[in-house]
Length: 370
Image (cartoon, rainbow, N blue to C red; front, side, top):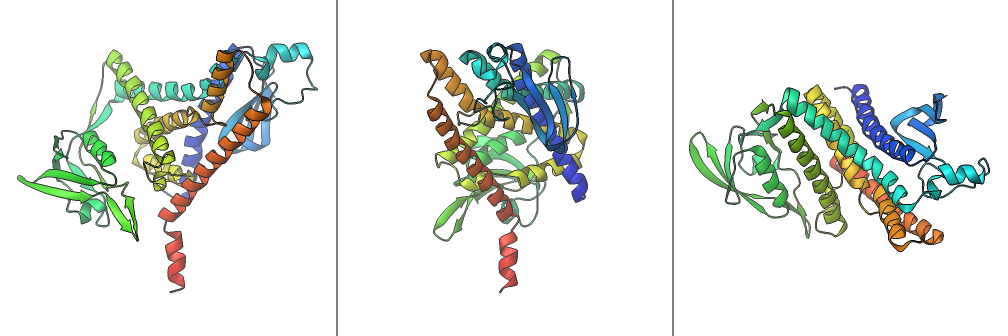
């Protein structure tokens, strides 16, 4: 896929999941009587706009990477500070300003975005599993390349993994769980190759000087796939479970990185999202739709983390004010949000650094001077 088409696919994916997120905030805000001044598809210069019957200005902006909703009383689209509201009367502010609403209402509005992402992903999974069938992979593998950890450790395309760390394997998802659990350790496999049983021990780490760095990609994928359609009730329960498990897995992964139980090199950035969006689109429309659902869950899960500046931080602060019955000190809240902003920007920069490092840009430059 050429770069222009890949970029268009990337913008479409990011635009969909962020727009769904912001629509979640808008819907819950309106239900709680908050006046939404602006809803923008994209950022930057406004290409066209139109006000609806509720007075909200709907904008289409130049840079189609997501969007935002700006509510009455906001100093900016982040909803952190209350503006100097000279354009509204006190009665209008009391009725429609986000910052004048009760803590439990602000909590619901903050949580509306992430839960919109979860509901959106669940609806995708329900439709796919009901009408097309969800992919099921057996335990026969394809090895990515001769440069992969899998190949150098002795795995080959067509191998059937029958045990991992002593536990029986019947489907690829079980293999994936053992790969994740064995990062930084040794993954012991029992395989069937052409009717013969073999044992392999794969080091899921590599040494870089004095450091031991966990291996995060083994380099295998499922070889065979079948699509299993589910009855509607089973599809609903299965889809809810899938969304929940993905959300927990995303949150758990970030927490492990923050507390030092997982390598910071596991953090991916915007380039990683660009690559997976392009790869999924190349694999077909179903793959791309499923990737939209997965990114939607990831966005919702990360935003629900109790980090100031994310929705989860607003949920926690609103909950504290609800329970104590009094507002937190504004200066303290602003300071907390600044710390959260630094943390989030730091993670974004780390992800971008890891992406660039994985592209081996520095090694190429270094080799030019050798």
